[in-house]
Image 1 (cartoon, helix red, strand yellow):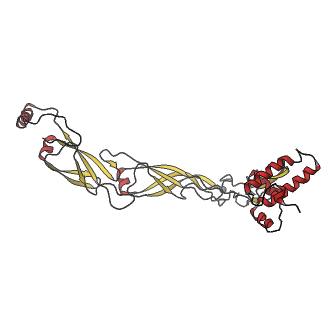
Image 2: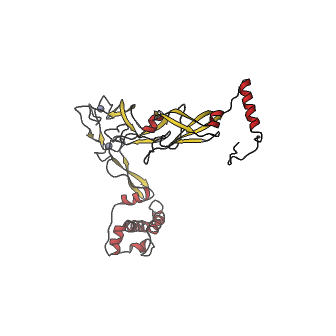
Length: 349
Ligand SMILES: [Zn+2]
Ligand SMILES: [Zn+2]
């Protein structure tokens, strides 16, 4: 018996890649279409058989131990041209995922909310029980591929006649056909419909966040598992309150006299009214923090803060009496002149 390694011109420790390369080279050289000499044909058979044995790790190991093993050309074909799928693939298909938008008020985003969305989707067809077959009829085994989902064909290749396997076009590889499609779903096993979707919005979501709702999407073809829904949060801008991470922000406009003398006031927050206390000598840009009146933390506990930035307003239309008061004020602060300062160190008059 000839040595398979010798036939391929390889040593016994040849790698799988070397075996493949060597076989390819010899097969091209000795192929009957290229080399019609009878001894070349014998060699081609030897080379191919050697490759059959050595290209599979199991049969190679068996051969190395002293045995031999051979199998059909189809396996070689697959080695070079990819392995076709074995057996029928299921007729049903998973439903598509969907990306939807949900509009929320700021308070809903911060505190959470239960919402009901009406979605346009695919639901299972009831008359046919999602099979797609007309009630009373059944899904049948495909006559063309006899249920295998595959068609085998002979093709001419550089290594001679080969058998290729392609998915059956009649049943699209499923091995099943629906001779009488259900009229309600036209054989799809699902129908388009509007459906209510109840969603629990967790507290603390923010604009652009996507909520993942597994299995809430459209039902698949022929009873396939439903897809998922991704719900993208869109928060309607609030006329007063902004958002910075878990904090809420607001601007408090303060007349210059109140800023100088300090004040207390009530403001309407998303939690109801709250007291704001500002000490005398407040500066434009100062921030008053109301602890715990921000957004709920989506991950983690507690809430952010409400940060109120003071916007000190200087009167722009003074009557003569007010003008006199400001002039007096200026005279009292004779040393305070407009001057250049840095952003960091705030000067105080
Ligand atoms: Zn078929
Ligand atoms: Zn149906």
